[in-house]
Length: 212
Image (tube, rainbow, N blue to C red; front, top):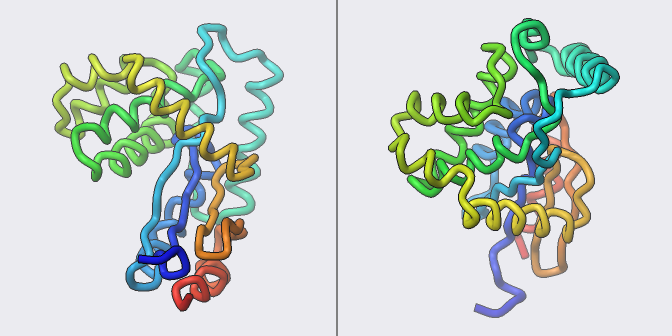
């Protein structure tokens, strides 16, 4: 197959603890169902915040809570459980959740989406902290994963290298925010504007690549 006839690929770059990715989840599902025949979507973890054991500073706590309220205002139907800020010890660390998605994926490709969704629901609807390994291991058990294997893989050097590779790929694409969509076709890589309320503009931007 020549380069000119390689099928187009859509990349979705996200972080499971990104509130805007949570808001985009319903529209992402609609978009996937509307992709042209033969087009595939590759999910990449962008890594929003690296590992840290330090509690989240008060200024950052206020910023994140205001971001949640802004998401609720701009994307109707998106919900958050603000009890999280009372019952958990927030840390500005999303790499553990990203590694959890990779560790889950190792037990089956379908667990990529399922673990991402489980983390989002735990964080935003159940007031659980996905920065903590205990939370992530509990979610793995709820999903029916082999918890012992998941626990072994979660903080393994191999899983962390995979995360670093995905972060590097997303940065090489020029991705600077999450969620992001990028379309790769015979002409190169093109950003697709994310629309939280209507899938049609995204589909219209993607469809021409399917005809190349």
